[in-house]
Image (tube, rainbow, N blue to C red; front, top):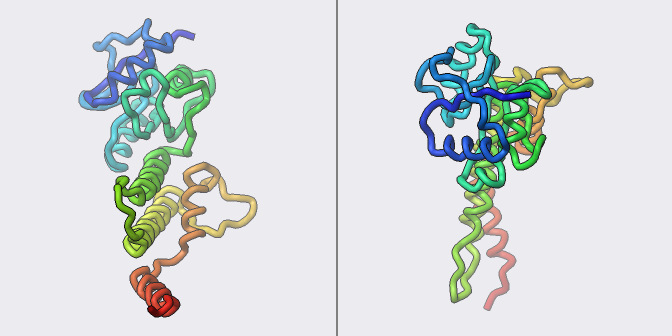
Length: 238
């Protein structure tokens, strides 16, 4: 089916998205700017009766746009992710909140933007994609922070600093998961069986896994001090 769309807004990743769509053969039929039903200043892709939101902002602006779309009878789909320039050739990592119906125009656009058709993650309802991106970004940052630049001379591993940073991240992830479960799911684990409908999506499972793995805030500094003392006690005396 032909896909008509309009690219809206100003953002560094929009030309790369447009290029990806052109490469995938979805550049032929674009909407006339005069036909827009949405306010100026929004960032994303406008299709007939559907809005693909590409803004990289917070939950409150997204909620306001979704409410506007609801009153206007327009489907609102949330997209999140890190979108570098090479994605124009190879496809983008897409985290999707409130996925469209299969074989719809919006579904075709998502398939075209992804590395391969279907290679995008349906995270759940609106706001779920942003939550997943925050978790993934935190884990990626943690992995990279432990990799020091190569040096010519070997040196001792700063394990106390690394552990402290990891434990601080664990607390932030626990808080992030608890907030998502409280605000978007309305239920805290453990859940009864069968699983409640509100918790049957990827982001809820991710938040539930974090909450069950890191259930309580810990005194990480105190634990680190105890561990250091134990290691010093076990260290051979010269």
